[in-house]
Image (cartoon, rainbow, N blue to C red):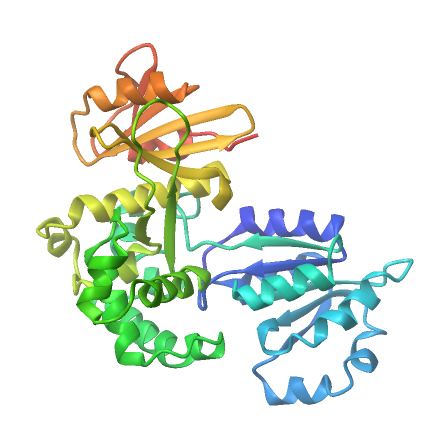
Length: 385
């Protein structure tokens, strides 16, 4: 077991402020385990697993089943029973509040749309990521990079067993989970597409090129991409562009969100396999960006990359209010200042620019540019306020 106390505290705060809270995340990322720990800490509650026929039978008359419950009521895999949302609205409006509802599910668009429309003002959302650097011993950072953040993958007895788990996850996700989210794409097609994305990891999205490879229209492969993004297994990092008098890239960069899944799709089992592969730098970039987003507690609408057609670029731009923070990821032990960094500082009016590197130690490269070791990320980077 890995203690996910930080996430438990965040969700508990939401439950104290709202009658309904939703934990969203990919399957097997730990939503149910987290919910059980929250119920235990809040001294009781009840859980319904909407994939369990016995629990579905208990909810045959949902108002009758739910109206007298107290404490925290967990509804797991809520996307399977969207008809529960109107019932939750009625129960959430009772005064005094008798129970608080914790719903778990994917971030499928239909789920988000229906829940937000039905429970407007009554529900708060929390996206649960995979394991992060804050949750593991410092010396296991490379293991997290290799195996990814799914708890059962990270905790496997060996790299081979971890790889076997991830391969099984990918197969089940494509064959069962995506169809349950309304994704009606042939399993072989989606597997090929996901593998192709792995080879494009950390690169600009090019719908025309990928569409030609599949022999389908740009809009079709764009739909595939959006479906994997909605299922929280792919990140589309949006480009930041504003009127700077420079031509700026406007296509998103694509990342497989979990590096363990990335390595499975590339058939890379061990650290040495990864370090000998051409995608090693891209893989590490995606890993560090994901850890930065977690550490900063940044929302998806606050994170961008920036690139101009003349070659200036910034791997991660985080914007909250008037704050503009820039991050460059360099898999090197000796980071140095580049013209791109100076351009980003000047053009984007950054509050700070941080270079995350693979070596030891953290130090100033200039009065405006700070280099930190990836090992020091949790100590040197503070959450956004």
